[in-house]
Image (cartoon, rainbow, N blue to C red; front, side, top):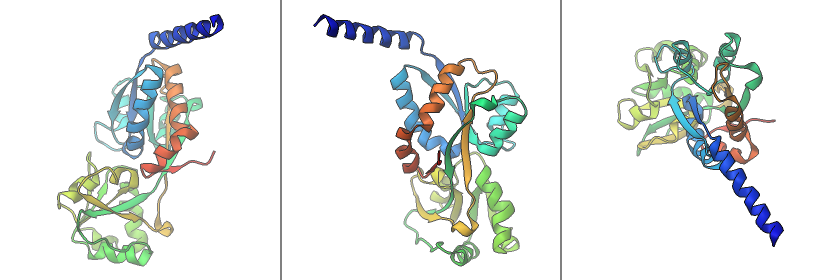
Length: 256
């Protein structure tokens, strides 16, 4: 009995110690991994006693909210979660510790239409091409998926000129939100950013022959105030136990 009580006492002390050393972590995350993070982040906080102060923004671009722009003007962060090649650029600039990089998930591009509208067949390249040509208007994002759609996909399909007058880049807000309101007939963005939006119906992923897979990764800025806790968060997000959540939010797990 004494041994049992001693064990409980040690456990209580350990719990109090973890709370006493809990910190507030500043996390910057871009859209593709946000749905998974919004589920996993609170679980990490509950398990560790740390709190998470989260800022949302794209991985690139001119918007003030973009993660590179936030860091450039001196905003502090303990963790950045973003498109892998954009993270590589921050590492190259010396803003993120290269040893801290953790691979999180792969993201594919999909399509939505307004809720209740007929869902086109985009399972083939020809079906996708026909759908885009027949659409009244097309919306795509201002982040990694939108760059691919605008600069490569339309060209690969041979419909760049036909779509120029009716395709628009949507900044700062989810593409599915403008489709749900009826402002655009179809929308293209990473699946994980399309699924959470109410009022839009998910059609499917682009055919693999013209698909673009975006790797999401995370790292710890070189001037992070709480690198030890940040490392624990990254390990939690990449752990096998997190993969069911990762996949449920429209992402693909990374082979390790």
